[in-house]
Amino acid sequence: MLLAVMPIYTYKSLRAAGSSGAWFRRAVLLRLAAFLALSTPLVWLAVCAERSQLSTIAIEQSRLDVKNLARAFSEEVNSTISTVDMSLLHLRTHWEQGHEGFSTQVERLNKELHGRVIMQVSVTDAQGRLVYSSARPANGMDLSDREHIRVHLEGHGDVLFVSHPVLGRVSGQWSVQFTRPIYRGGRLDGVIVASVAPAYFSRFYADIDLGPDTSIALVRYDGTVVARQSRNGSGDIGKVLRGYPYYAWRTDKTEKAGYFQRHGQLDGIERVYAWRDLPNYPLTVTVGESLADANAHYDKQKTILVRTGVVANVVLALLGWVAIAAADNRRRAVKALAEAEARWKLALNAAGEGVWDWNLATAMLNLSARAQALLDVATPAIACPPDTLYQTIHPEDMGRVIRALRDHYEGRTPDFMAEHRVRQRDGRWSWILARGMLVERAPDGSPLRMIGTFANIDERKNAEEQIIHQAHHDALTGLPNRLLFGDRLQQAIRAAQREQTRLAVLYFDLDKFKPVNDTYGHAVGDALLVEVAKRVAGTLRESDTLARLGGDEFVVLLPGCSEAMQARLVAETVLAQLNLPFVADGHVLHISGSIGFALFPDNGLDSEELLRSADVAMYSAKSTGRGRVCGPDEHLPVAA
Ligand SMILES: Nc1nc2c(ncn2[C@@H]2O[C@H](COP(=O)(O)OP(=O)(O)OP(=O)(O)O)[C@@H](O)[C@H]2O)c(=O)[nH]1
Image 1: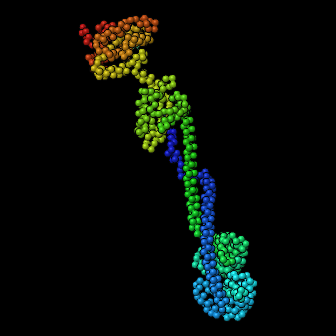
Image 2 (image 1 turned 60 degrees about the vertical axis):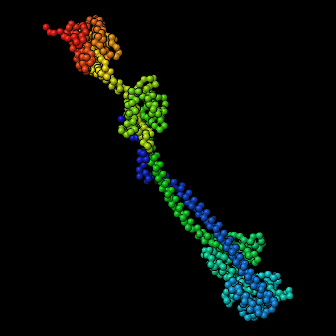
Image 3 (image 1 turned 135 degrees about the vertical axis):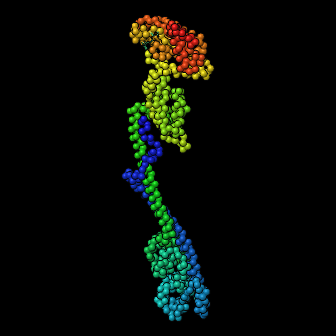
């Protein structure tokens, strides 16, 4: 059958349709390339966005750091300058009260301040000539041209002045001059000068490692670098910075602190800067952390991010490859399935077979056009729960169908096959051969889906029935033959045994039949035999069986007959019919018959014995004159 050779595509077989070669198919590789061309930029866009986010965080963190440092630095520097200023005021008081013991005061003060700041102290007269120096003997040198002296000689009031850093000609050391005017009697009497090494202002940060490119500077109101802690060491002291936003303090006093980001003027390094004005002095502190240092804190995270991107890209590529290869496999399998389906449907249609697909989970039966015609249903999909099969299947076939289904479900048969009748819409029964096989089971093993075919077998069934009929019936009269009669007689005997009843058999042979044949021909003899069968059958009950054993011999089974009298009565009735004239093929014929009968169990305990008894009785009737009925007890006359 076609079903046996056609491929059955199940989910498993679809999966199996894929092969390792699928990975390297051109179509798969092209799709993978397209997938990667789309997904890779997305992955790296995400990585770049995250890296940029980290850079933003780095700069924000850096701003916070430099802001805090600028505040701390400004407080420290302010404290140092206050110390210097307080010391100047203290020494000025001494100087104003008299010059004696002034050197001692200076030494004592330096001792007290040791560790915080060490100052050299000088004093000029009202003309700017040096009258005292803690570093060397006063030689009356004219210092009136120096900015930090001149500013007081010009009279700008009692304010602290901070000078440009000056590189000592002899010492080679930088110093910054802090000066205040000296008054006597309300008039300018000179200038007191404290010289301080700029390193004092940034020493506090020498030990703080913010990164190699961090810059901490103290800048004068005109942009002059007073002190700077950077990779350049003290090399930048005295240089003038231009164009920085913190100059605004001179015009716009509202801004006292702020940020900016730029390339450093002194070393070209890009930094995040925080600046803050000293509250009481014309100085600004700046702290700058290089972007490279700020970002270095997040280098590890950035490296991890890049590695994550690489891993994500690889994983995405592999997953994409698997998914694309699987999709390609499935597409090919489905295509192969469609082609195969088309092929075998064509083959099945050509063979006149209908295809059915029964979903047991939804109880829906899908039918091809041919299957629909065979079942004689109006739609290609019908509800068909297993317990409604009896509505369409012939009751006599139902048990066989259910058994075949159960055998297949339980694995005893490789496929399902059953021949059964189905009811047509006009009420007729039509024979079909149903074949099928389970293609899907639930995880618990219960059947989910079956597919199969229907074929109409009416013709074969009719032929079979005809053969069976011919094997059991007499071709001339249509009566049961010896075989069928023997079968029915055995069944009747078994029933009589079970029910403790009796039955009778008549055995009769026509008298003077041969002359009919001889006189009118065989065809007339045949016609007479047919008429005899009809007439005798007409005298019997439906439950009786009239059979032709051959020639002009007939038997009758009387299942309900329990008395010899009854049997005799039936035999007499049959005989009366045989004695009546027959018309066969236009000829009026007169025959008769000799009838013997026997009873079960009286005259035989099985069919053969019983028939033999009836035959013997018939022979008695024949030999005692013909045209009569004889029972089993009526013996043959003793031969003369
Ligand atoms: N026409 C016809 N004749 C048959 C058929 N079968 C057997 N015969 C004939 O039927 C006759 C039966 O023989 P007998 O029963 O001895 O002949 P009979 O004349 O009835 O003799 P008795 O029974 O002694 O009265 C034979 O001539 C057979 O050839 C048949 O199917 N058709």
